[in-house]
Amino acid sequence: MWRERAGTVFECEKTPVTAARGMAVTNHPLASAAAAEMIASGGNAIDATVAALFTLTVVEPMMVGIFGGGTTLIRLADGREIILDGLSTAPAITKPDSYTPVSDTWPTYMETEGWANRVGPKAIAVPGNLKAWCEVAERFGRLSLAALVEPAIRHASRGFRVTPYLATCIADTAFDLVNDPTIASIFVPGGTPLKAGDLLIQADYAETLRGIAQHGPGFLYGGDLGRKVASYLEQAGSFVRFEDLVNYKTVQREPVRGTYRGVEIVGPAPPCSGGVHTVQILNMLEAFDLKKLGFGTPETVHLVLECLKIAAADRRAATADPAFVDVPVARLISKAYAEERRAEIDLTRAGTFESRVLSNESQNTTHVTIADGEGNIVNSTQTINSLFGARIMIPDTGIIPNNYMLLFDPHPGNALSLAPGKRITSGITTLIGKRDGKPIFALGLPGAHRIPAAAMQAVLNIVDHGMSLQEAVEAPRIFTQGQDAEIEKGFPEAVRSRLAGMGHPVVAVEHVAGGMAAIGFSADGTMTGAACWRADGTPLGMGGGLARKNTSFFTDPRGIAARAAAARKQS
Image (cartoon, rainbow, N blue to C red; front, top):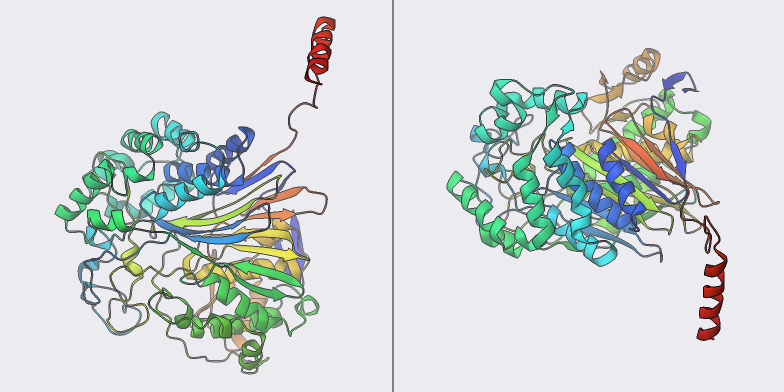
């Protein structure tokens, strides 16, 4: 499918799927299949999401794991909307000066001696994923935990074929993976990175998953697995202790809400920045006729870049744990504040806005968007932060821990500085769009601090530019925080040249952020799932259903008589 918008031509490389009983869009076909399997088994969207996430820990091991963190936006069939925060926290023994920074200036501001906050045991934060997933399933799902974990166990024990995407990620990180014998034995056996098509078996991890299926999340958060993991990490020099696992708690939060041209936008709350800054940017853009200006024109791209820079300048105030920092959410998402900041935009020239964004967040995340025919919608972004997290594996468990400590400012005294028990910050942007109270789309993606920009542009594509859902997720993207203006190569050279002439420091890039997963909702009850080319995203829909009530393949006269007699007896 080719799409032309004001001179910008792009090809949709994937096709959407339409169904009514359920829709799962994840960044791996086996995870989408696990979700569909749960719905076919009588589960709902919550069951499907948890099964998909467990499966992703096997088939996208470089992106997500039970020793990571994430955030989930849930809209229940009864209309309730909640955020469950399962983000990682700093271990209790950490201090603001636990790391030694190598510089007070960018681009090495976040770097520490020996990259201790990036690779190895000292980079690991307290995980929230497993507890959050199990809590969601227990509160809102229908199926047993054992049923939800079974597809992941199957793929870990029997193995699956490595995709080119996974193979590239392994090759790109092999220089670190080879330094840990346990993780190297799985992904770089004999010193050679796995290739696309190789069979990947994770026997130790399958056993860990079996233990979780039997014992529940307490297996890690206070049980035998937790003791084993904590003992190894402590002797390896990590800050994580068994007590950190025992004391970890998820947080339920109220979503951030705003409106854009009559569409209500629902997103995550701090310490996730995505909801706040998506609404902030949309508020600023609402005064401009983007539909008339057109998609991909220099005028439209210029306005979006300027609004992105303003949001970046404000991001410091809304990307810290609200338990530690006063976050002015109401002001940032107000229409009045948008009007105030909008006045700073020059329509003809790139401006300079104060920006001291402290972000070291990795793009290497995964996302699922799943809905069922009953009206439940789950939008969940999960990660172990960098590719393969801390790039070690806990022996005999198959667990790849996160490297979330990389996200804390190693300099004391700042909003993002390290503090015991503090939650990490994130660009997670799980969005639901509604019109007249009814969902019209749900979407999200990986991509770290580029996530809010990409998600916001998908909203513009749908609301302003009238794109189909598939076009909206695959359309070329842009990004800036006030430095380089990253423009995907899907935009014509003429557009990039014009922007450079307006003062933007244009850099042509292959892609901005990662693979988006989206679902569109129609008035007739059907759903459309779409995934983009930037990951192994795959939409799977559930149609059909059970036989009509009282339908039988062969009508036995004796059976009819027996049912009639039973009915008379009951009456």
